Amino acid sequence: MRKVILNLAVTLDSIIEGPNGEYDWCLNDQDYGLTDFWESTDAIFIGRKSYELIAANGDINMFLAHKMYVFSDTLAEVAHEQIEIVPSTSFAEDVRAIKEQEGKAIWLFGGASLISNFLQNRLIDELLLSVHPILLGEGKPLFQGIKSRIGLQLLDSTPYPSGLVQLHYAISPEFDLNNVAGAD
Image (cartoon, rainbow, N blue to C red; front, top):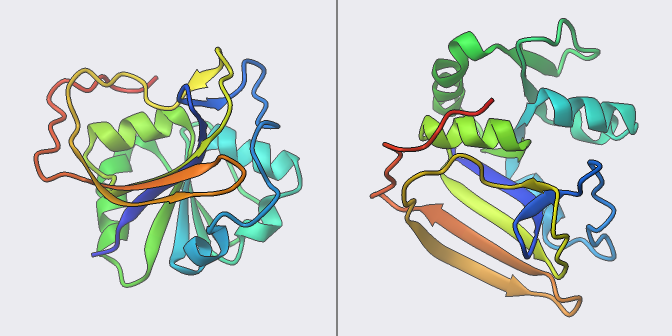
């Protein structure tokens, strides 16, 4: 079975985007293992807002080497055959079916509401968090609506001279989601 791996940048205070949606705080002075991670995946799960952001910035083409699944109830069409829309009505079933297909790991790209839904439905296998050496104080928090403990097992940690620390966790078998609130 394929793994779903949440891989994203986060501040030390657990913010994934600034108060105005900015992510200019992300270090991009080196690869930080992204090339190796990219090669270990062949599909991307992404929310509508994140998809629209990378499409508007002109970054969509670099993602099209992988199959992309956009989770949305409002997006009517996409511009490329490598992109498929997944509605909320069949969200968990579709993800489980995709995980059962042959292939490499799947990158859960974001955003925060999608991550909450994945947690609620027990669909994340691993977390790969690039913790940036900055505190934003406000913005969009990474984890929303978590009401109970979620056990994690540290698989690896990689510090970089820039101060970025990459943390790689597996979700522990005692992953308890009885009290995780649904996403908006």
